Length: 279
Image 1 (cartoon, one colour):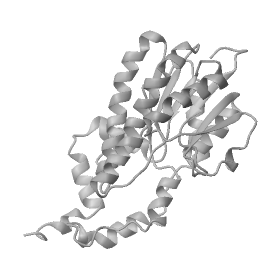
Image 2 (cartoon, rainbow, N blue to C red):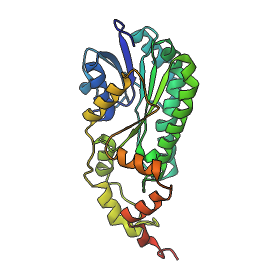
Image 3 (cartoon, helix red, strand yellow):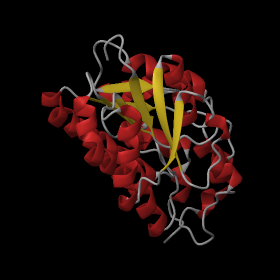
Image 4 (tube, rainbow, N blue to C red):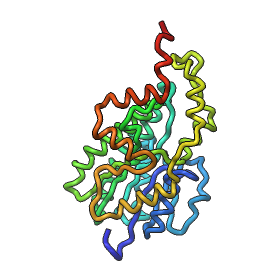
């Protein structure tokens, strides 16, 4: 990304108040022209800025990709400096919702890279940023399916990093801690509860307290500033741990046996109270 050239950043999932929204603003503040995607039903008034182009896109829809790429090429002239795979959802109940989660969180980024990789290669220094999660590293209880989508994203990004290196494209996985985004708020808004017949029903109140907690989360703007600054470094990391509790998670994952998580989460979520309840 040399001086004198317009720099373009594509960010998916830029709904009001989320990470994508904050990233769009911070990339603009750092001299980028931003292409921000939203779902068709989402308001775009929060993205009204001369250097932000807003395009409707559902990353799960293959038939939208060709016209989307054509529009993108018209805006950028055929190159793309930064692709941020941010669009994501969180739910963990029936199989249909799990399939939708994989469609958005995993297959969406794959689809975008498949269609846009030549634009990234054509840039002076293309960068793909995957917004991952500590949930893809540690077995955060009551989030197994979401965790699985982020673990898949991390490992895909690891391999993609090696595959794209010969073409001068960098791939960075962001291992995100808790950020005060709409995903956290949606669990409260949707009154997410355990099914009445769940084997975890004895923990229903603890689950409700967990959903309604006020986490010590990083603000979206602080998160975005860190990501945008990282993207512009001369040397990019393979993984970028960023957000609340990431230092703690990194330490345990790096230096302790895998079963440290079993011990911790069993105690944090009082899973020992389930022993003997089903027999």
